[in-house]
Image (cartoon, rainbow, N blue to C red):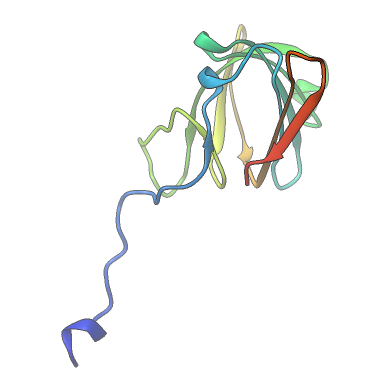
Amino acid sequence: MMNDELAKPESAEPTAAPGINIKMLAKGTTLLLEGDNDLYELVVQYPEYGIVEVTSTNPALRQPTVGQFMHSAHGSHPGLKLNVIQQGWAMILRFSNGQLQTQPIASARVRGTRPDGSHWSYDVF
C-alpha cells in the first residue's frame, strides 16, 4: 500500500464553516434558525453583549424572552466553544432563570432593514 493510499486520521478540530457572529450584527437584525424539530427567532437587542430576544416553537420559549447568546457547542467536540452560530452546533443561551441548549442548528437566515427602510435577507447555511 502506498503512502497516499493510507487513510488519513480525522482531525480533532472542526472544519471552517460559515457562522453568524451576533456581536457583528446591527440592533434589530433578525435571525431565523431551524433545528431538527424546533424553530428559533432571535432579534438582536444589544449586539456588543450578545443580548437577543428569543421566540421559539420550543415550549420553554413560546413567549418572547430576552437572553444572551453565550456560545455554540457540539457533542463531538466536548469543551470546545464557538463564539458564532454554526450549522450542526447547538446554541447555549443564558436567561435570568438558567441556561438552555438548543437543538443543533440546521439552517439559518439573517434579515434586517437598510437605512432607507428597505429590507434585506440572506441564507447563511
